[in-house]
Image (cartoon, rainbow, N blue to C red; front, side):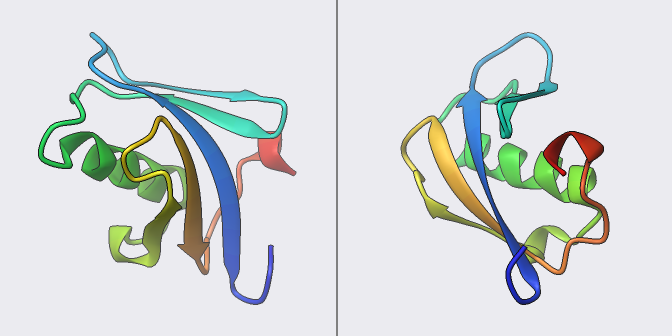
Length: 86
């Protein structure tokens, strides 16, 4: 964590039957139901990350990988950091 934000890398799978979150090798694997059309998958990713880190979705920004399945995300002032990432 730097200053008041956290940078994480996630690998996203889209168009799945069920959502999931897994932790492997200091990376988050995230499965979402939405397809990557009209930014729907990215919005679902942001909402899932906001719930995981207990922050408002407005405090989350995809800083790299908007149109890719590998994403770098900045979370401003996370209230909770999952044990698997510590």
